[in-house]
Each structure stands twice: as C-alpha cells, then as structure tokens.
Length: 192
Image 1 (tube, rainbow, N blue to C red):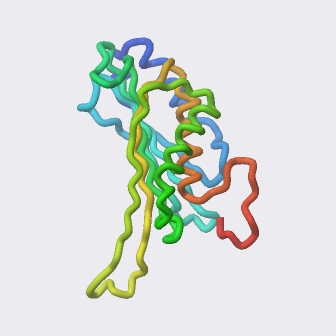
Image 2: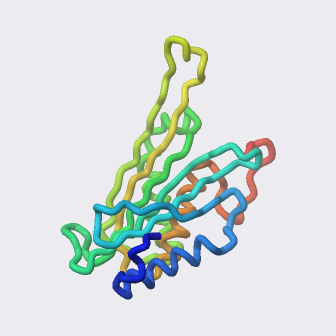
C-alpha cells in the first residue's frame, strides 16, 4: 500500500486494512501467492494495490493478476461512488479453449459469479476479455504457439470491506489459470 495511508480518509484506511489482512493471512490455496505492490499514483487521490501469481506444483507460473483499489472522496465520473476496484488477470490458455467463441462471456461470468458468491456488493461493473495468440518466426520459428486470456475489469464496491472482492478476484485468477474451483479435486494426469 502507499506511504500516504496515514493521511488518507478513514473510509480508505479501513478498506486498505482489509487488503492488508488478506495479504498477511495464509492463502486459501497453496498455488496462490498474494503480495503488496506499488499503486498507480495518477488515477485517484488515494490508491492501494496487490498482485497475485498462480503456480503449478513444479513452480512454473500459470497466471498473474493485479487488483487496485482507488478512492476519491469526491468520486469520479462513471464510478457511482467514492471507490473503484480495477482488476487484471492474465493466464495461459490451451489453444482449443482460446479458440472457443464463448470464452469471453464465460470469463466475464467467472467474475460476476465470484463477486456474487463472495457477497462482494458491487455496481457499475465493466471490462474486457482478450484472447491473444503469439506465433514465432525467424530464429524463434521452433518456439511453440502460445495463447492467453486477459481480463480487465472495474467495478464500484458498495462498502469498504474488500475481502469479498479480493476473494472473487483470486477465484477468477485461479479459474483462468486452469485450476479447478476451490474444494474440487483435479483429475489425475491433468498437470494441475
């Protein structure tokens, strides 16, 4: 979080405390590492940010994400309140999954369903889902083609408790990275 926290308004400090508590707690999933990161300074008068990485058992990276909490006591156009959450998720996808035309709506439903499941009150949600295919040429011609999904979203939380929002974002990151939902065992030989 930022050094400006001590001078921040009380609602922002309370919201940041829920973020800190989440970072300091034992993660719900062993594949997930959540940590503080510097927040952008130009989007709002007050900001805090965390990042997360999802790893396989062999420590190879499956996905990364950032969650930024913005606070402007005067609000901003389109926010529908004083707070705004900005989320980013990027994960490698299997080529056949990336080719599915429904991956965008499915990815968006992961977010909205996770927010609802964690009772994270929100309004004015918006975002994009991008599928990217990277092909290699020249001296890199032998490198395999890669595909990935990027989710960029923002929404306005309806209260200062960020716990449900963070849990929802972590769920989406894990789903995008190909992990089964928490509490569901993956199939043998799935590599996850």
